[in-house]
Amino acid sequence: MAQALTARVTVAARRIEALLAVKIQDESFSSPAIQGVCYGDQFLIPSVPWICVEPSPKSRQWPPTPTDMTENTLEVGIYVYYMNSELGASGSRLFVDELAEDVEFFLNANHRRLQNAAGDDLVIYSYVYRVDPGYSRKTNGLFHASLLSWRGLTKTRLTDSA
Image 1 (tube, rainbow, N blue to C red):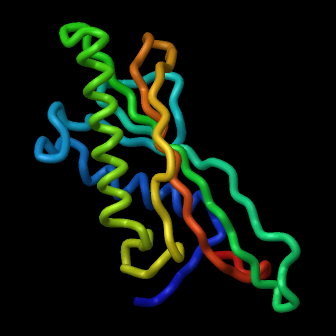
Image 2: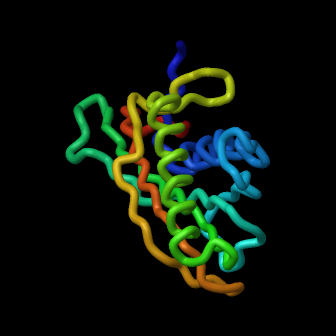
């Protein structure tokens, strides 16, 4: 496989968004099915379950090598939101936790070498390294939420713009 390694966290986040968007309305992945996936966290969650993919910090090794090669660490936050009054607090919490674990497994099992749509590697290696359960207040209410923290490693030249 070719490499199109990127130093852009936006490229990684958009690719994760596209991979998760394939799971919208897929009852075999989640029941109830994911209703939407968007780039960036939102003030209003249109329906549930909903996933937001948020670019996070990027860092480069210091100092660069004499050839201007650096290792880049890209981070992306993946927010999973859900609330269902019929299930109650316990049932909603369990659902969002299980969906977060399903998303974690999907990314870790299938996309450790995150690739673009053409099959070129965007990172050397990546995985979800942390899952934080909690709550999130949005314009339209309080939601059970889980934040998955994804990290990818790349190596690029400082002069590359990919």
